[in-house]
Every structure is written in structure tokens, then in C-alpha cells.
Length: 97
Image 1 (cartoon, helix red, strand yellow):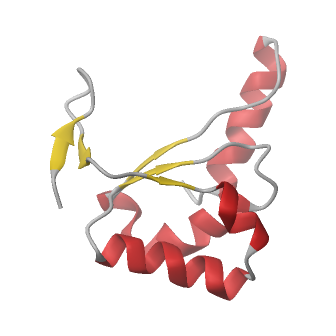
Image 2 (tube, rainbow, N blue to C red):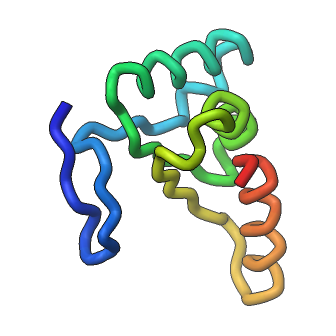
Image 3 (tube, rainbow, N blue to C red):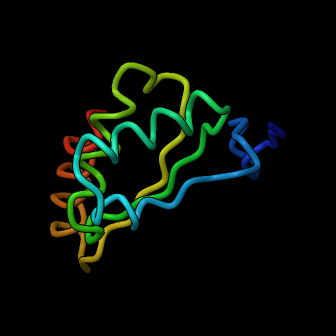
């Protein structure tokens, strides 16, 4: 697996990332298994969003034991400070972060 620095953040992530839209179509067990296999294969960068159905929840469940070793990018689908703050807090909870 190749790793790169993520912009100017100083974070190092796998060059290959996993997008989590497909997780919503799998059973919870299959989704967790898939994410854990990706991590075991060296993938450390995951992309999700609050409007990807249950993907944040499944990603959080799968990566909770290794949360310190991965980078998760998520997006929120609301506008305005208060709504965004609430959505971000919910995403952090869903991601077990």
C-alpha cells in the first residue's frame, strides 16, 4: 500500500481511500467485515457523509477498535452554523469519535 501526506495537514493516509456509499446496501455484518478487511489491507482513509443513510454508523462500528490509526472525512448536508454544528456532533457520535 502506498501512503501520502494529506495536503498540509501532516496526516499520512493510504493513497487508496474507501468511499462508503455502498455500505448502506450491505447488511451490517457484511459492511463491518468489508471495512475491517480494507483496514487489514492497509487502507487508512475513509470518506463518508451524514446523508449516506447508515454508512457513518457502520463505519464507526467497524473502525472503533482502530480509530486512532485511520482518517475519516465526512460531510454534512445542512446549511447554517447551528444546523451544521448539530450535524457535525451527530456525525462524530455516529463515527464513535
